[in-house]
Length: 183
Image (cartoon, rainbow, N blue to C red; front, side, top):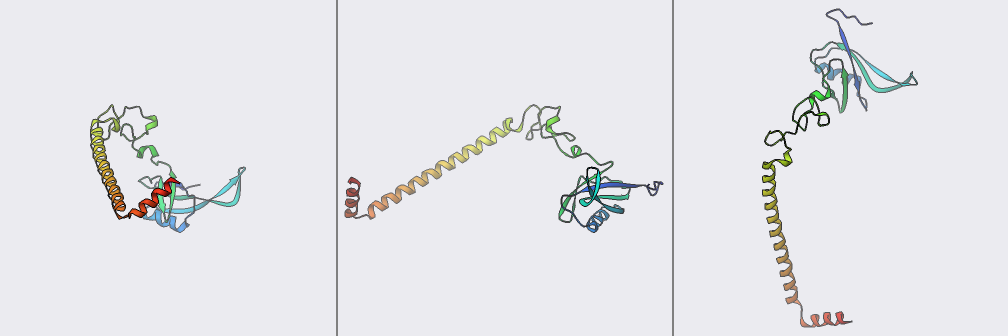
């Protein structure tokens, strides 16, 4: 089906998109990445193993072999597409484990012990680091002092306003208030 002589060996990959880009946009984007596109085919929806006349939005791109593998996600126009092809790096090769700070796996299947992000030592988490605890206690004491000072200022302002309002009232108004309270 494909001509696979040494010069013309081609490769195919699948582009999956939730919303569809124009074929011309896909072609331009791939050519900017130095990929020689032979054809772009739209994938059709299959129901009960029968092909319908509905397009899924996915594309199957036939192209000449390329040296450098594409990343798993590719931005085409305003859409982000998932790209699958032979020889592509796995997602786990790109991610950094949050537990041991090594590439190639994630926290759920990490065989190593915890490594602190602050001091780079094994055996404890960042939250358990003495350096982190010192910083937090300093910040907490600073914020507590600021909150206490703000509270004192607010209470002083309320007291000053209350005293001012008491001085501005006439004795008749105070007498009326007293009578209303008795009834």
